[in-house]
Image 1 (tube, rainbow, N blue to C red):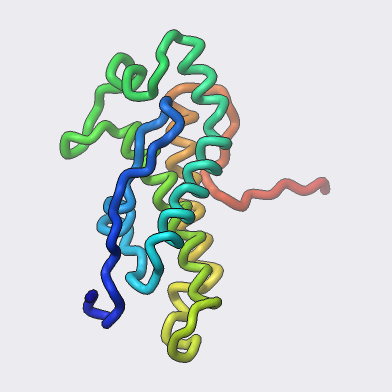
Image 2: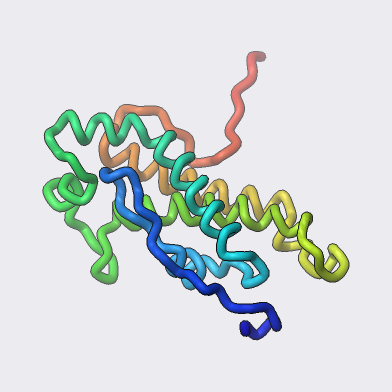
Length: 167
């Protein structure tokens, strides 16, 4: 049982990625990004998988560029071209993890509205659009960092919801 009285997750397994990008772990999402304990294992797993799919889709041009340089996995490219690390974790790999995990958290927090629980006001901060936008922007900043490192001439915004209008 968690401190909330809800059962703890039974699975904190790894999610196998596409072979190019690093595998991610549900445990890292839970521990480092404080996903609420109210979720069932399958909800968290699905949220993480969907975030991986979406981030990988956005980062396809980065993957294509790295593969065209002769690297079959992102880790090999990173080791050869961007060895900088913070706390023994490579900065580009950290940006990939952050992009996926914050995107997953943004999506998962919005599911609180559909769960049986106490009045909505108790979880208003978890569910607010500004909270979702914060995590989507964090994801986008990490995506931008990956583009800047591999494709510096690409125009990628650092905000998830950037719009242009004709004047």
